Amino acid sequence: MPDTLPAATDSDLVYSRDFNASPALLWRAITDPAVLPLWLGGDTNPMIQCDSDLRPGGAFRWVWRHDGQPTGVTGRFLAVDAPRRLVNTELFDQDWTMGETTVTQTLTELAPQTTRLRMTIRYTSPAARDAAGPTMMAGLTAHYAALDRLLPTLIPGRSDFHLLATGDRQITVTRSFAAPLAAVHRAHTDAALLKRWMGSPDMPLEDCRMDARPQGGFRYVWRMRDGTRITLTGTITRLDPDRIAHTEVFDPDWTGGPTDVVTTFHESGGRTVVTVTITYSAPPARDQVFASGMGEGMAGSYDLLDALLV
Image (cartoon, rainbow, N blue to C red; front, side, top):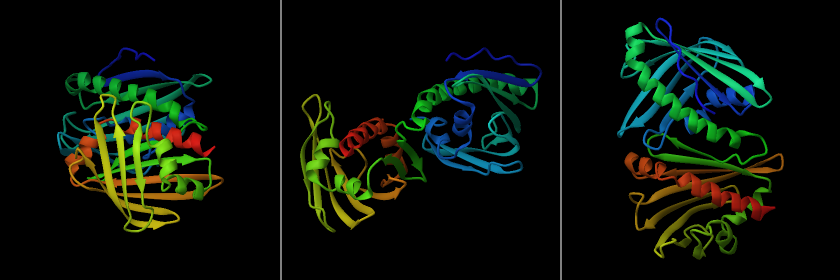
């Protein structure tokens, strides 16, 4: 939905936007440390740390990687009234806002599944507001557009695929499936099943070899639309009923060397949650992969797996 124009008075900057979501869902999106990095970062500046103690007096620390260097913001919560009002202070490491600001967010339900988010940022002075305002507005517009795209995936019953940059060198992926753990585990180790969900019409998996045992190897070959091929080879280092660990390397090697991958399976309430932790050789390699759009491909493959498991 379109943004409203900012209406600033004195040292305040006011920003308002309507979202197709309930207040509870929107509240989760702006407060949950597992969800915030999915929209409050970007391909070129992923959020690599999101710590939050969501209570009055509680502190938070968010860190992004920008131009290869970490940069962050620290603050504390002054008021937490879920799902209606959140007030916090914030101070950036590189103090481009000319001192600590106070941010007030209010959520107002306009209609079922329609909520207005109004954000008021109070700067230390009108001069500070005028200096920071254009950059802040551009950033909010981009981030809230990403939030718009994310919100439908957070609705219960939709895909709960999440991809998050964690630490300095890792990407963590989670997705749940309405299937027993054993069936999901088998789909990750049976070559005939892997071939049915790890490809796509645009990028079919034309060769799939799997020796599912400790120290066993595997080889996948995808054919791209232009006829070129991408090969992934690796070695299984651990194979348990609830965990698979392996190393892998692509040819051509676009990920900066071998990576370590740990996939865990946890079954609860008839669903199995898959968590994949990928550790790259160096932070720049992780950031390049994160910015490549890999999430779209993985989400699509997991959708195929979801249908296969039915």
